[in-house]
Each structure stands twice: as structure tokens, then as C-alpha cells.
Image (cartoon, rainbow, N blue to C red):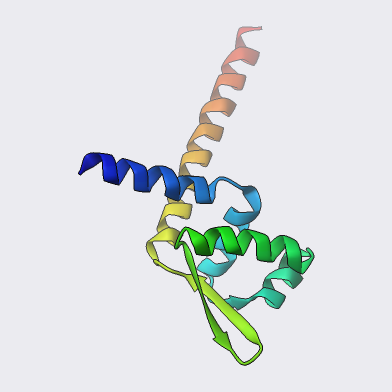
Length: 109
């Protein structure tokens, strides 16, 4: 059982292991968006955005619903928004630690 959970976590985090995919998830945390909206916000070509959305969709991180000629993407699980916030808090903590270390080093000089 634990092995299944660990495998799921590993695959899930692999899906997140790209800066553009993280940015797409951050944008989708604010609400559902079409590929065209994502392209416009990101300032990227459709192929780059579509490729990353395909990875996220294949890993069941996002879902797309076809409406007319557009596909509207959203987070599959709203907890992903919380996960991204926690990751930012961890980054901020590391940044605070690095600044503190730098200040200590400067004070020793």
C-alpha cells in the first residue's frame, strides 16, 4: 500500500517538475482558462502551452472540458492551489534563512 502511495507521489511531482507547468497551475488556481487565454497571459505559442497541458492532463492534474471549439482547463483537485501556496511558503522560508546567513557573514567581516 505504501509503495502505491509513494509511486503516486513520485508521478505527481514529476508532473509538476517544470516551471511552465507550475505557472500554468498557478494561473488555473485563479479559475478555469482556455488555451488561448493561457497563451495570451504567458506570452507563448500554443504548441508550448498545449504540450505542457498534455503532460498535466495525462497525469490527471488538470482537466479539460470542450465547449464549442475551445477547451476550458481547470485544476482537477482544488488542493493543488494549497500545495502551490505551501511550496511558496517553503521558498520564502529558505529565502529568509539565506538572507539571515548572509547578514551573519557580513557581520563577521
